[in-house]
Length: 353
Ligand code: NAD
Image (cartoon, rainbow, N blue to C red; front, side, top):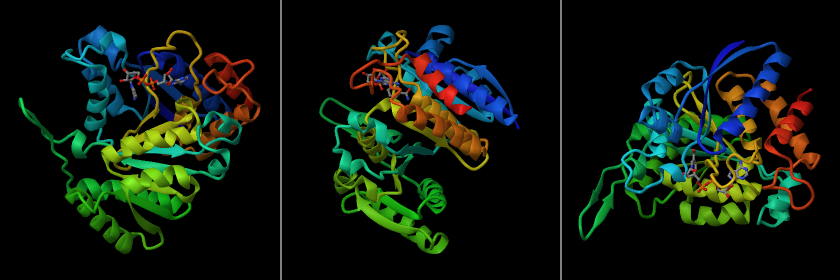
């Protein structure tokens, strides 16, 4: 297969972790006989420095034409003045909106060898394997905002079409997994949630009768996610609830450096793959960032954008073997020697073969 992959290293540790992910993708291409080409473009703070804006037209254009996009992270203290007119994060929101990436998939599967790094009791983490599907381009984050001297408001608005498309993605995912979908809302209070719940029930009944659908209120979901995380298969929810629940869920895995994500639009459209963590300015340039989340994001890229399931599994198994062998970067190493980013990536490359 020929594939054109755009790489957006971004800021902080972004360039360090995307560089090793490209190496791993090249190794997979060689092993399976594929022809992947890579081109790098600026986004975030580096794009503000080089082009005066966080999402240059050349970057967006390259992404729109690509088969898939691999992203590091954006942001950092250099660009974080609250009064700044342009901010790195605007580039991220703008590219998601421009490419219509409405579904953010975040798999959570704590690895047995890394349970020591989680603040949750190990016995609660056994057999945990779920994916959160977060709606990414609607809701309160994108609604109209007002502010005067005495008050402020943020409008939460969803159209039926926005809800239907992300729910269908989640139902389809549940069909491919264990056939269970948990739809999270706040239908006892919010009108947008009542619309969400009605649509989930209808789509489930009419289009996906083979998927077991349950509705869960977001407040109790926050509790269940910690108390019985093994009970979930696919969880789908709106933008802000998903933002909060996925950061909570990252603690099950023990480190931000282990969690990948995929941001997807309609079938056949380009997707963006990135670790869920940020640009980690506190460790940038030291060569000690955990690259595993980015390598697992590259695996998701192969699976979801290129349809290369065996190749994706090869990377995932290599990361799992490296963890089994106790090959940890500093964020995971309880004691003993921590690997550098490069050494951890080499451990995965060695286990691909
Ligand atoms: P962060 O995720 O960058 O870092 C939080 C903590 O986790 C830090 O101590 C960091 O060193 C550590 N960490 C993160 N990734 C790691 C890795 N791969 N290996 C080892 N340790 C890792 O969050 P933050 O510090 O709140 O934000 C820093 C910057 O990143 C901010 O400018 C923020 O806006 C931005 N950010 C960007 C994205 C994105 O690009 N998608 C997401 C979140 C935050």
